[in-house]
Length: 184
Image 1: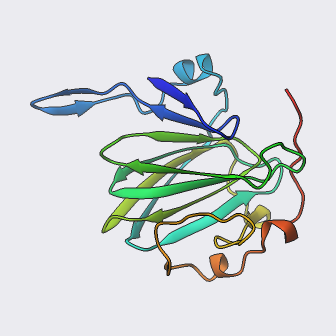
Image 2 (image 1 turned 90 degrees about the vertical axis):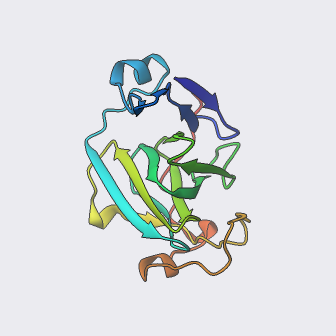
């Protein structure tokens, strides 16, 4: 597998080694030993699977501390995946990264704790899989407004289909400061 560093330190694009022939393809989508050798040592405790139609935007979500690291990928369709650094004091605080994930490119995105995450569906339908490092906790749900003008995210859609919850998240400047940057 190839691991690609991004402009947001700790956020990684992972391209698996794929074996294809006339029968189809095979690849390891996750192997703890391989990921740990590349610095991803989270123990993932829960797998989630969502299916969304074109135009749906989910996010920008995160969980309050201790938070959740995520390993995400698309198995049907295509999404524009977005990560925002919400670690107060970070040199990249408030910066975002957008990555195209699709069943075709088979890319994965690793998102450490301290980042908000969201995606929008650009294909007719998309199935999105994600591993998380802590169990889902409803009281710890948090979010940032998908259209926060201070972030300036360049979404590929202008009128997304949103959940009620995603229509009411605060801007980053008004969100609780629960994650703090610490140099490693």
